[in-house]
Length: 110
Length: 120
Image (cartoon, rainbow over all chains, first blue to last red; front, top):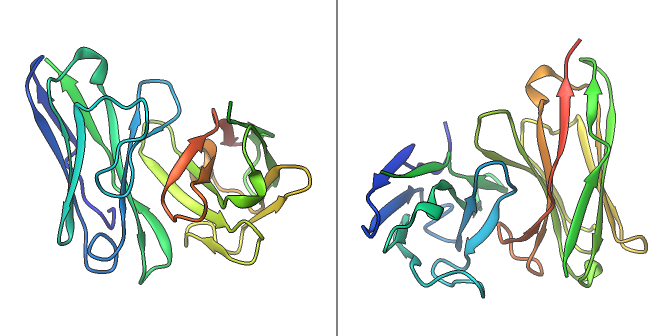
């Protein structure tokens, strides 16, 4: 069981907005920056959001991140078929002295 | 263009050893901390090791502590992972990932991964 918790799956129709939650504790999300990664099928992960809500250059503005207290969220608006992927949140844990990565959320476009 | 290229994966028997390498190019390697992250077949990502830019700080997840050793050579722009006492549950694709400077968890760039299979 992961130290930070994500829903195993979310689904939506094209154009819809979906959100993925990442729930942690005071020693990780409550204190440190959250990062989000996208892993398309058969490929290496890619940085999607850094410092809780910042998009690297090249990431569409359909992707947005937020953080409040001990939880963080990734939102995908205007859902597209190419967004079908696994999404992971990651954060440093001050108590465990490790990077904790959520179990991942599979996004399906139906 | 930033490139991280892992090598050294393969089939190894339980209890055996393997050494992975990650060759970095396209950025100032000595300024960035590095990580190893793995993914078992059909499973999620698992971070398990970090080394700071000067090798002064090293962290391991409990699952590999005492069995795996991370190291780096800034003169060769390379990252290494010495894996000993391998177990079936270590079977995974192993990725090296660079941090943006020394921001923990900020995996700026990833390699393509190398598959390690532990089986008799």
